Length: 141
Ligand SMILES: [Zn+2]
Ligand SMILES: [Zn+2]
Ligand SMILES: [Zn+2]
Image 1: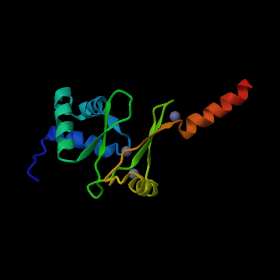
Image 2 (image 1 turned 90 degrees about the horizontal axis):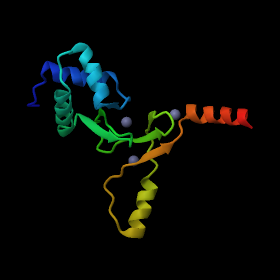
Image 3 (image 1 turned 60 degrees about the horizontal axis):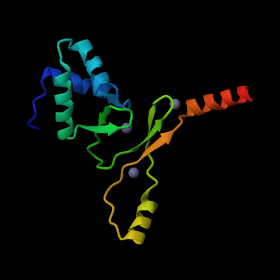
Image 4 (image 1 turned 180 degrees about the vertical axis):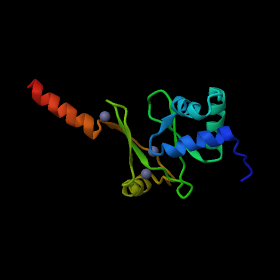
């Protein structure tokens, strides 16, 4: 690869690597990078994330919480896993199984539409939050 990793860029990449699966936002990445690299500016973080996205090191995600979030791209897969987003605590978990092949077949048959990819987000309550609600619900009754 012809891209030079400056120490600042390496720091940003390390933060993303160390927090794999956490879907950090730009500001969260900035705060973490500042610990090792106090002189870094937010603009540099923005630009570096943009660069990493352009060269497919990371993927940008939007979970409708008003910020961009990033995770490592998997170079083996052009299809991304799907996300489960808790509307109560904001926790994002990942759904590795893809159960959509049958649905894609059906779309193809019914609409003649050749699907090349799909994106999917699930909104709801995570296990913790739904357990909490059940407990509270019982108390209130
Ligand atoms: Zn939750
Ligand atoms: Zn993810
Ligand atoms: Zn899928």
